[in-house]
Length: 423
Image (cartoon, rainbow, N blue to C red; front, side, top):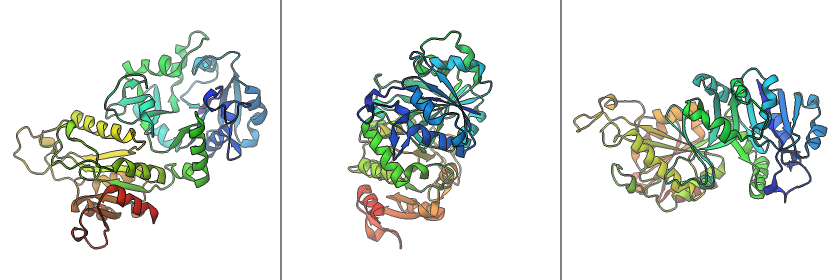
């Protein structure tokens, strides 16, 4: 599979770091961003690379040459004038005949591409975009997908929105060569607006969602954040080929106020310090994953769509304070019958309802999590039991006398996370 890297950006917002080279050539810890990208591709045998260059493109070509010294083969497409984020793809029509990877040249990443390719092939679609949560969804475009991963909406940062899932386009795509036939003439084009968004109506645009490390270098603030993450090894550790550590969180009474069965979106209110605690988890390198029983689905009191809106509100409120969840795992089952409007298909004794460990095991399989070096935090004994059955360490939010032997107790999620991450 060939990889196309769009490396022609000027980088006006990051010019204070270095305005003498194109943005992909800005050095981070001694190496250009583009070199990190090529090294990650090479490790996974993605060795056929096409660089689309423009502004100061000669600097890139002189540095990388044919790519032989990096163990890859590099070809170049040179823009004589800026063609937007997709106009130069017109030139690929004669160079690519199969699915290919398209990457923004100004992002730092270390991801497991085989997982991305598998998801793309599974969906039999024309395009798959890599999405992930970030710490500033309020000023980012947000991708909305259904439960199968098919994109249903793409909201720009300028559009009015209230509650939304924190999922943004990371700048890595797998595209079908068939899309190149839609470029009939060479002209300026926008990748998102002119190529990807029209696929939504065709149900041919899917997401691959992953917590792996992908961060754009668009501003000096983000540049220095990436530099820190390289130095601490976080960039490489988040690749899902490496075992991950997670802090699993109960929802009600842990992140948001406990109100019994939460059925109305207005009843979801974050607990004091919860967003700060989740943000600390994000910065630590642990995955932040919610594990929650939601029998209101089985009881017919809340629909899947209503539950999604409730979770969207939670993610929005967290995102407003720079925090995010890597995933939410939910058990919809309830074994007892006799409720008006109950849904029979969910009235069953399952393996995913806490205190059983099924949801944690699902998360571990999906994200290659080392459960023995992970934590389960909750305000119920069932949370602790589920965590221990999965092999996790556990922490209890409540009175010390209520916690079982070997499980520390804390007054709040913030106090708990602060202590756990300091040891």
